[in-house]
Length: 255
Image (cartoon, rainbow, N blue to C red; front, side, top):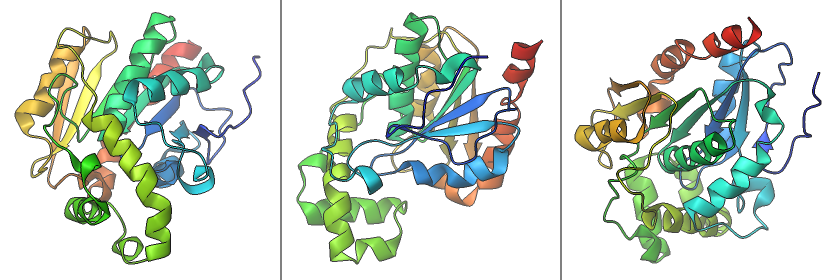
């Protein structure tokens, strides 16, 4: 048996599941943290071991500067996942996390250790960037954006002390995703499943469907009722989609 790397600043494992045959790696949205995926870990354990990525600049990493570049983030995360890939990995990324997961998948595939599937949630295809400049707004403008997306607890947005802690990391994340560019011919080999809300102000169904251009493997898309953070209100439905796939690769791996 190979020995696992210790839990690190980058990778969080809320429910260790040594008997699980597969791992689901979750990548947060801009301004998000690993703890956003605690309910997913709770729901899927112990059948699937869930790992959540913790970007720098938030929670226990708030003293670290953020990394305002998707490629640089992906480089660091791909390295941090070394040793966790002794079992099949499935990636799930929401919003910015979908682009980061895509770039991590590219890097790991180049090393022969790529994921068995990528779930890309609430994000345009990599070659369809949004023409946005939230990262250039003042603090009030950034807070207004967070309110509009309904993905941040409103009580946090009223607490000046907490805002002072979360805004630098959030701005760094928005810089990363709003300056990210990807050519249409850039692809991964793994299957891609896209999840999107039917009323998402950030991602049209056409822009979500364009993820099909970025895989040489199978592609499918699931549409949910809701906005950009549809997955918070449709968690049971999202978990059902995940459960259609996670666990299957682990069974094949053990066979």
